[in-house]
Each structure stands twice: as C-alpha cells, then as structure tokens.
Image (tube, rainbow, N blue to C red; front, side):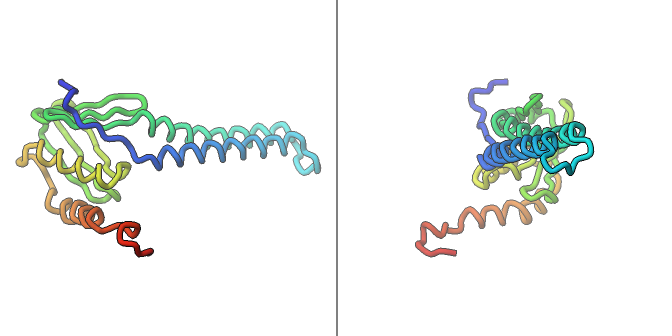
Length: 182
C-alpha cells in the first residue's frame, strides 16, 4: 500500500480538550476525597484508610478514562487513499483494500453516521461523529467515490438523513460572518 497520497483525518480537537479537563478534574477529586478520608478531621469515617483507598481507586478509574480520551485524541487517525482505508487507533491499526470489499453498509443510527466495510481483510466500522463536519463530508465523499457502487448498501437513506443535513449545516453562514448574533 502506498501511503503517500492518503488523505489523513484527525479527531476534532474538542476531544483532547475534554480529556484534559476530565483528567485534571477527576485527579483533583481523587486526591481531595482520599486526603479528606485519610485525615478524617471530623471523625466521620469509621475506617479512614479503607475509605481513602476506595475513593482513590474510584477516582483513578475516571482519571484513566480521561487519559484514554487524551491518548485517543493524540493517536487516532483515519487515512483514505486511492486503493485503501486505514484506521490508526491507540493500540492497533486496521486496514481494508477497496478492491477486496464484499459489502459497504451506510448506517444512520449514530449522530454522524457510520460505514461498515466487510471484505477479505475482515470487518471495519468507520464512525464519522468524532470528526469535524467539513472532514466528515470529505470522508463520506471520498469513500462513496472509491468504493464500488454495486456493493454499497443503504446509501440513499444515509444521503438523505446524514449527508444532506450535513451539507445544509456547512452551507449556512456563520453568525460571525453575517454580523448577527443568534
């Protein structure tokens, strides 16, 4: 696979921001609640050490989720090339060649829609919701044009429910451009 001509798409920056805020918030809550339980200034905890441990473990799990979101934001990529699509995740890379596909099903039940690819390389689900609207539109158009039309399922439904509203949204002038506030 030649990756020089692949178009790279990254997740929206908001996921990185949410991950950072959540990590800081949960870490501080974990430290604060564990310290409060351990010091047990007012004597309200019958077992301060055990309570501090439970609080620490509880908030550490949520802190880990925030760190996971940061890792996903930094590491995840979707590459669409002339002959293949490649998804780079936190722990793995999945790829599908367009000429080896047996089915491509467009789905509408997620906010941004998705595409399930099946072929000799297995199955790959591409969720569009985590990408910016402009990137989402470009991804959909690239995939629609590069996958054999005969194996695409539910395109008309996807187009009417996902693509048309997306194009409408992208074509609306921004309030800052028109000088009017919402």
